[in-house]
Length: 401
Image (cartoon, rainbow, N blue to C red):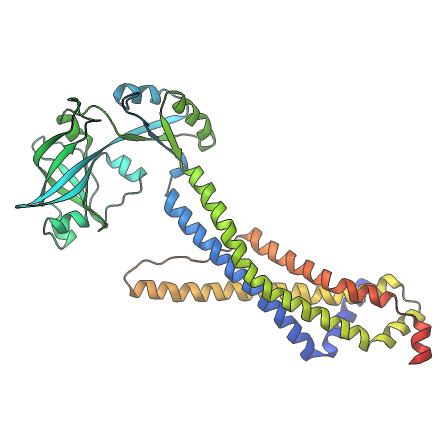
């Protein structure tokens, strides 16, 4: 039987009972669109979390630290040895210390970090007001970047107005970093604020590493290493770990995120799958009733010489038509619903003073997989009616009908 004629015949049969076909098709569309809408939401959230964790060039960065600073130290000597490892471009250390922010006779616990502008950029620490850390050309001036929690404690309610003003802290150097072997405090250190970070969690201050060098600190808490080839990350990590250091790589975190969200997406897809199963049962019911109504037609086709395979194909094509058309329209509907929902969320976020976000993501492989899945559902649904149609005895039908 000619393929074009077969397709035309299948669509003609479906249009014989338009309402029944439309209702069956609607069920498939709802099921597929529910899967697309829910799973694309999972993909979008996963993408947002991954982007937040990885940042811009995070796959080029490896974090280096020490498990026990008494066994091996992270200092200029060991930093130099790490730099010699192949595929390492740059290395930026940081010093973590404690502090107390001072406002007249009041004090508040704070954290102070000796870092560089490059380290802050790699760590994804963004300055919202002012500028990031800059080199101290004047030895009498010490620059700092503080967060809003710290500037507010200092009495600077407007972050933008705090640029250029001064803040005081007591710097507490832990014994692990102190050359004296015990913790020591540098009283009332004054810093000029050059930038403010939008973070009101707890007071934090970022200063130049040179300031800690002036305090006699010659050790580092940890470092970030930039590699030239992310594919060599495991190789570089092994060499650093063989030196006695610990390493962390964003690739490990991303793998964990993908694992968690893989389960999350399966749970979301299961809700849409329930609707699709109901739609598949409706499609099966439609095709089975159609077969019972067309018993004489099938018998006549057999008498006219139509092969069993062609009779089977008629019902399979009808099922596949519902599956593919319903799948395509369901994907489009799910995509449109995602755009609408994303627009509503962005509108609410902007009204609340937030930023625009993209909550839904539609990987091409996922959409293609959904379409293939709807095709398979149509195929499986049509197998039984198609097989049953081939078993109809034309003579018995003519005898009793």
